[in-house]
Image (tube, rainbow, N blue to C red; front, side):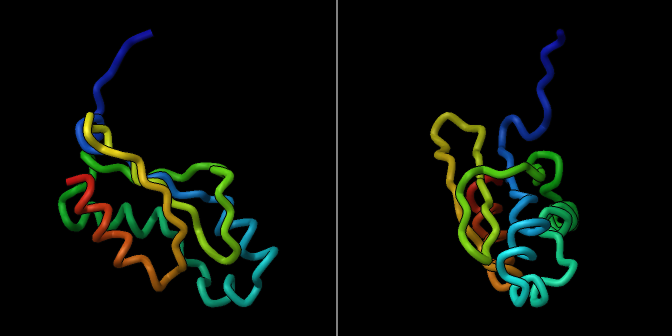
Length: 110
């Protein structure tokens, strides 16, 4: 075993529940699924973080269920890797909340 120190270790991670938007929303709320379409929050965050020069020190990753299910919304966790950083769990409405979520991520992790 070898210990590593990735760039995000000093900033943080954004965990996006993939199950919310690939399984739960289409099954439980087809009208919400139709509104969201093929929008992928994790991919959008990754591209936006790259474009703004934050990718690497901040990573957006997909997770399985975090057991915080909110009908028609996606669970996202902002997990700062600093001593004084408190983990924040949010449920977001897509695509309406994506910009507000991004601003909060940048504020908390950069």
